[in-house]
Length: 355
View 1 (tube, rainbow, N blue to C red):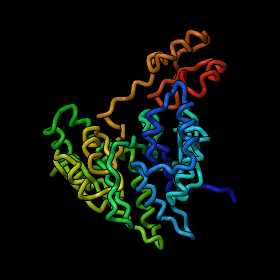
View 2: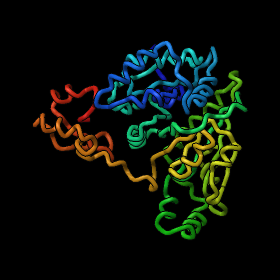
View 3: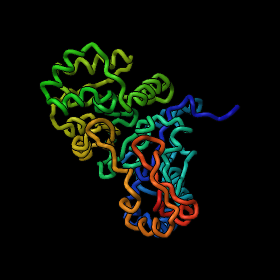
View 4: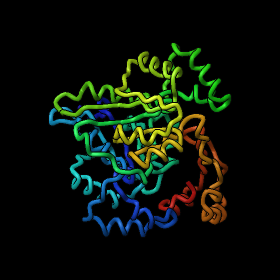
């Protein structure tokens, strides 16, 4: 029988989101990654410290038992294969039973989310996260400066979600941005019984709900909180939407614009997802946090610039290789990919100057 991940909750995570590689990252040069690779190789026997999403991954894997493997965590990294040695060794030392990984040595990793069937992608690379979201996968940029997760609930996985543009579509947020709070409230009151469309993280919420049903003998529990800037009476549509989806949350905080960080500190999630950079930055002072670059509050990244504007060194590459072609549409409407002659691309494969 063919091996498949179809019946599992699949999390793809970058090495820097899982482990603390900030010191190593300071020596990383995309034009010449040899110093980074040599440092990782020199530290093969030095286990990496836990990163921002470590606790989330550890608790997710705790839902697995000897008889049922309900969660699969896959390393999806821009690291090179040699660095993979240290990553897997660090995982083993930390008691994380990781078996699968894809290491692209500087190339785009998000294209492997589709064959993995990932329910979540976590990375410190904003462009990779943006592209994953554009392809329809729940994804967040891990704020590596976030504080570590709490330790008070070892047998309970706690996750907090923002509502609009995360669990829900940004329909209501668009009204707020264009017409203000009063128009937003009027809009939501008039549509209180009409469920919102799903946002980028609705599939993850559904997968977590299924995981809870499968928890069984693992001894793990799941607790989910909705933490939103909405207030009454706009709260009704949010609750009604979840009821229509037949998906429940354990706690709901309608904060009416109050700072989310102090409330999250009390909830102690293993991870918090929000589309607003202000909320995420505040939350990172209290809990592990990730930015969901989705919705009207997040304009597309300027990824369709010529490579020489993204990287000054690429100008010489384009001049040296006269076969550079104009940008063409990439795998998503948000990304433009510069096509370069294979000879040029091969020359700069490690530094990814031209792509």
